[in-house]
Length: 208
Image (tube, rainbow, N blue to C red):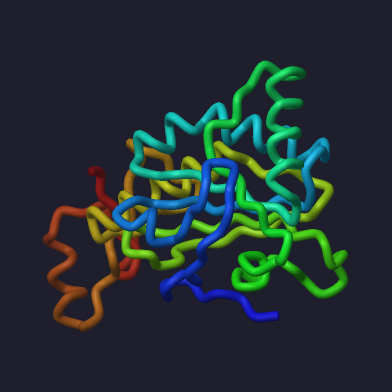
């Protein structure tokens, strides 16, 4: 098993989905969150899909598309989507990949040693508009993901890209951001007069 690397090109794919064929190239110019689940008709994954569905408009407003995946057929996906609609009143608006041959799962390192051959771990990949993998998060089978955290992480990465800054633990829009530390003795001295909230030479923050 190999894993894709952050800040490198995400593995290309072309796959059948509940919305027709989708490829990585289709999402060029947009952010993409590609997320896997172990199997259809599983309780934890059902709650996650409901969460993603309810946040879909929020992601879209941030120029981000959603794409699900499991090692199940299109027919299984469609039946599960109908079950979610009937039982929870939630429609799934995003495509779900049919990855019976495990081609996408293998390319993204979703099949871990010790896992059943037909199950992908609960993995989430953030791919930027240039097709680079920017973040990946893995969860155990027993615990659901936090969709709010994925919204926050996307907001943080987009803010960092736009402003050339970093964000501290738990950052949310409106909070102060971290200014890159100086790299020379002269820059350290200059930093003292640059108007930032400077705790030490390596730690300065500012508001946006």
